[in-house]
Image (cartoon, rainbow, N blue to C red; front, side):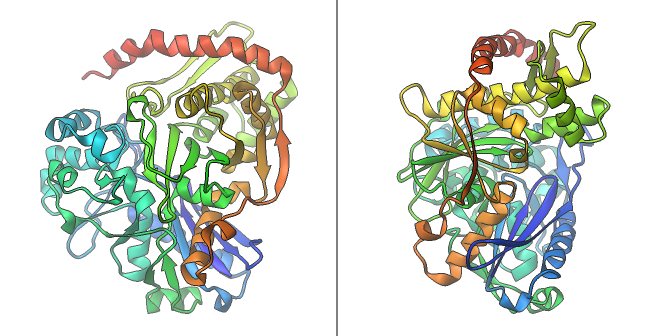
Length: 487
């Protein structure tokens, strides 16, 4: 069996996968996000470790830990865990959906104008390098003490193994990696005031990257098994869904939303805010369009609209049954693809006396679906089809949302077994590859299909009319968003 750990934004999920690729146990320990100032989003890395310990202990109560052969890691990308020489945490980690570093992005590109060519991406506030520019300018005493910068899952690896290592898929999201060469860029590090000494060593996601410390193994009831390189959450989710070539794309409905496609060669499109990263398998890359707020929009809307939780909101929307006559811009944390606009905000447009809570809930579901339409058009263009689209992430449990998404995108969506544990499943598969020597494509297969959702013809026509209005609303408000963000 194989242990997969996924460090998300809202919780740490641990699963145990058996040799037949069946999930034998699953548990999620919750996490909270701190937002001490506008645009800020932070977590304490020590909370990541406590939640991981809780989740792992929970799943290992359900299986025989002596049968676990290896551990795999997945995690939220871009976060900056800043460590002193003694590995102590210097400040709360700045997360992927933190928007404070927009001006730092400008300074970074001024220092290294070749940034898009080197990294294959635009400088965006959510990426790691601009965060360190911000820290150097606003917290110089902290920056002076930084000995290591680790991504979230790699902080867990340090606690588990004592090793400073990262995989290339996660590291590609820092803006310090030369993505085509799959190695750190000395030029990008210098632009941030850092050198390779602050960076972890690089491995492929399917390679071994450390061994459990004796005290950790004993506490969890495991042998001192290897820990795989692992992956950023999106690459891990793709491995869980079998997205290893161009025949299949994945649509992730987590805290954020991601449309993901794998490539056998390096392809970049930074001009349209498409992310071009290394995949977590050797010699492969991937591109993705990122919607910063997806399922997190539902978590925000449910209590605001008077529902006890997200399932209650979905139940009310389903019972109401009517498409919304209100538009919702889901930019609660700004937006990446295609706008690269940290200043963008969430908006309800078209409210009237008869607007109900259910109508607003429906508008939220539709607004996120429209954002995915933007993401799809940028990623694939008009002439390139996505092939099968597999839906993964916690939002995949909503059949209602699936029907809306299929109708907005005018695409069939495939739901597969264990879709809701996608990144943790991918992490467990990478753990298996790290010790088995198997061919990756024979392990990272598509799980059995449980449902295929086709577009609803009536809804498709309605959404084809609504999408241009959605896009026009952002265009009309873009300058107002930016004015509102000025100090």
